[in-house]
Length: 193
Image 1: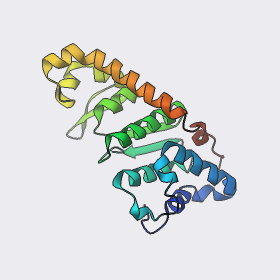
Image 2: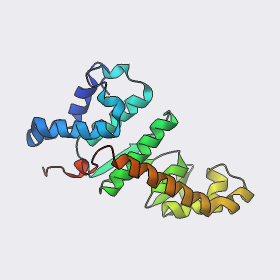
Image 3: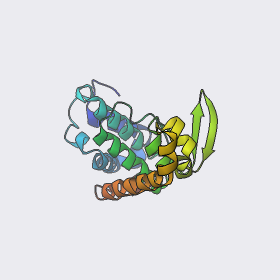
Image 4: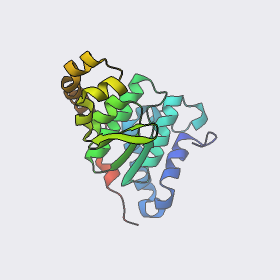
């Protein structure tokens, strides 16, 4: 993020290499799509990015990446330091983008939400993969809940599958609500370079 530039200019930089192909209307459409997912940014497009809160700066960083119309989005701890409201927005967007066909490589400490969304997940311990498989299946495993999610053995055994199903339902509701705030297809409609 370039603190001295406006929020809008930071977003425009994300589409810089495609500026000729997109034109001003295409760039404006992508900014609208980003702001549909992150309404806090729309009201601050003319303000210096350095004035944003930490959560808003994280939204801006993700939004700038989306401006390029990525086929693969690499996110490293996108929920780090965010309020619960912003975390919900970020994970709703991740789910929406995944459904729109954007491949996402996510490194995240919020294991519950990450595994609930993941087609494939891997649990790392000391830099080594110790478990891998479909995200919801990993989330339902009692040993994952016990070792990595802070649940005790009895709690993990009792609630593993129900917890995974509940998280999946909650995320589906967040994603469905997010669809009402803009078209995720804007990210998939990118010009070929």
